[in-house]
Image (tube, rainbow, N blue to C red; front, side):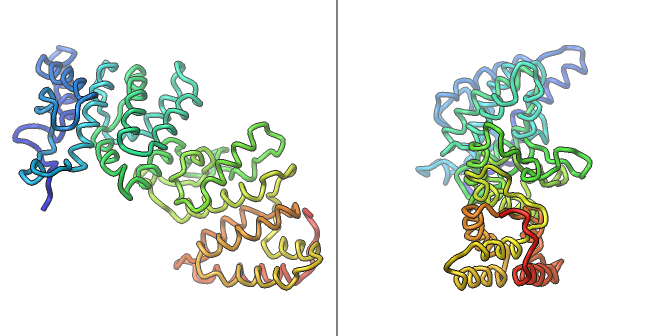
Amino acid sequence: MSTATGRTRSGLPAYFWDEVAADWHARMTEGRPGFSEHVTRKLRGLRDGIIGEPGTVPAMRDTHRVRLTDAARDSDRLPDLYVAEHAALTLFGRHQQAAVEPAHCPRAGLGTACRKLCSAEAFSASAVEQRLIAAATAQDLGELVQHLHRLVPLLGQEGIGLDYTRLMYDLAAWESPGRDRVLRSWGLQYIAPPATDDDAHAAPYWTCFAPDEMDNGAQLAALRSGTGREAGTVPAMWPYYRTRMSCDLREQGALTRDLIAEHAALTLFGRHQQGRRRTMHVPGNTPGTAARLLLAKTVNGEAALERRFGALLTSIDSGELAMHLRGLVTLLSRAEIGLDYSILRTALRTWDDPKRPNAQGRFRDRWDYDFRVAPTVKNS
């Protein structure tokens, strides 16, 4: 049985922030800008909750819309949604205090709001990104809320709203497996990858990589930090995604095949490029070609390399393929032999796609052929 419910109280909008927005719009229609006295009084009460525990702040009782059942009141632990609503209410209070218009803006996720904040002249994009990443890497709900309390006044100052209903559910999921979806949605909203090829920023990271850039070490370390992690859940990698997707998929934090494949390719490139003075993205170099070039440089261990490559070709799914590629790129990096990462991304995308049942076979045959036939040296 549920211990809390988000059903509305009689005659009230779904949540207090909805009531505040409705009050403001009604008064604007009447030619009386601002908030009514009873709403202003409740907004002041929200500030008391910043240092108060959920359920212990008298001034906030009338602002809660998640109702506690008798079982929840008798429990040692309040329901996650109730705790999340308390946190969202305190954040809303700070946000609204700094804003002239309603701070609650439906469909505006945290990533979208921070992207708009980057465009404000008062803040640099790097400063906003640091604040967002600090929040996204919070270890628990308490730490996350602390970071958000420093961020939402900046949104209010610039007139940027936030969907507080959505934020409440994001907070409720923070200490659960749902955190990955929350992180992915924030990241995809923030970078807003284009939906078409028309944008110059759609070019994959590896095709634009310049080996002589000063901050390459930090960028490559960020890519390697995503190894073994779910795509979109590593904030340090957010700036390097270029996967195209619709606005709806971004808002949902969708884990698409395209995003998974790009994530795997980026982590491989970060490992491959580490410590190398020239780019390890070499157009046309398939894993078969690269393995053949490596074989030519191998004094001992030819049989071991052939077994390793054979295991790669017989990968059952894209996850196993990525695992075998990690071992291969380590060897290729030492030998300074490059790979075509655009080919790798496509292979990782289609290797086990049920809609493309012949893709795996085509890649396997091509790579096996490239391994058996002496290649034209492109990077050795």
